[in-house]
Image (cartoon, rainbow, N blue to C red; front, side, top):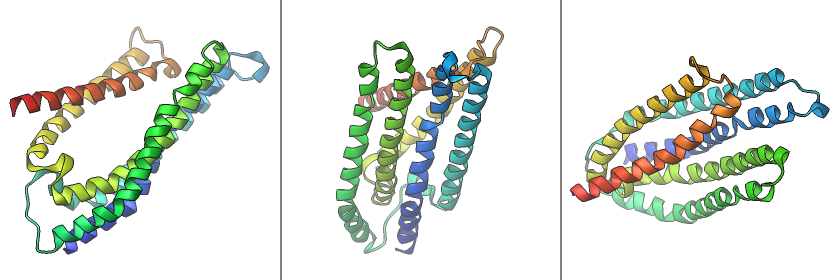
Length: 242
């Protein structure tokens, strides 16, 4: 019981930090895209080099803060990693306590989920609204990322504590069978993102690279969408095997 209560308290306290770190990751390229767009118009009196410098500085600062927050939250629950990987039994009363916590949390969880999903869907509107305006198309991408960042904030805020409850109850994505699949997906995810990083670095800074991150950032957006497809394919293969 003491372990369950401590773990849930830690996850509840860190949910806001993890959500904010995710928010920072998504908004980090916005100034780079927006400022480089403004630099193309003389009336804003901004050189492209200055725009890229300011944009990249903001991006690096955001990512640095996000990584620090992710690491701090991960270190606090490191001793509870077995919840994701191993089968375990619960003491008397722990299951009832966790079920009660989950029931009380469901209203907030669903509210945050609805807000997050709605914002992610609505984020596409600026692209369609400013489709025929060359200058505003890039600004529309910035608005899209801002809406997505807020949507991701609510989705992560909701999911962090929900996942903690599922880990203790061994339900959802953390049943004994699913844990084995998660280990495989974790290894594939590591390989996938290392390959994406290599492609990004070669495309941007390689022998034939353009050296302009304000354009090559799209690799990460495409990789994010494809990553979801890869995970779905893995789940379908595992279900067919079962």
